[in-house]
Length: 288
Image 1 (cartoon, rainbow, N blue to C red):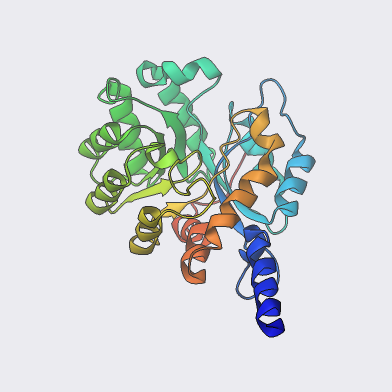
Image 2: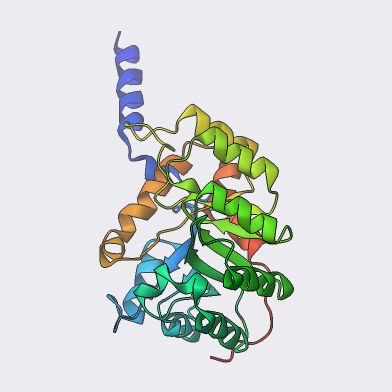
């Protein structure tokens, strides 16, 4: 009786332990490192946190890489200039000067000029995050932006639905696209079909619903999707508003909770390995 009771108590304690604490680097006794592949350090007119506060936040939550964008791009320049130890900063060109550009950049030749001018500064790895719908995806300036990206080996970070993503690949079959939010609530079967059809498409998981159930457990469908496509997913915070910065630790903890439910090799790829591989190239010195 007593040995069984003791075993039951041990199992209960283990079961109640925070799952995030079990999402550990398999080679170290600390939380698994995360590459934040959807981060905005917006300056409008000043950031919510100073640069030092942001860097401290990354260090506290073991975020060792970031896909850095900002509105305007000065915030990205500042993060790159910090040259923070233990942090890989991957700069993307944000095609916005002000928030209102979200709804008009695709018809604005001055935004294309902004992209070309920023790219000339050197060091950029991609363009985005940009917002786009199917109604606007065939515009002249979208097509020019895609052609510029492919010609210069730049990734694209697209906030778009699946139909719009298809249009982008129709324009440029050689494009490489990070799909912001992976369709939000799009059915997992459709996500699978998109990944199967487009080998140069990666799903970024901020705000993505359906990955876990009401008890914070991975759903069978998403567990299988991660198992079948372990190299195609990235994590992100999407700090587009101050509240996302304020809850940054909770966002990272939430990821680690369900990462802990995956085999360590798959969890490591999604947490940071896929991003490291995707961003393993650079294009010379950054001059800003």
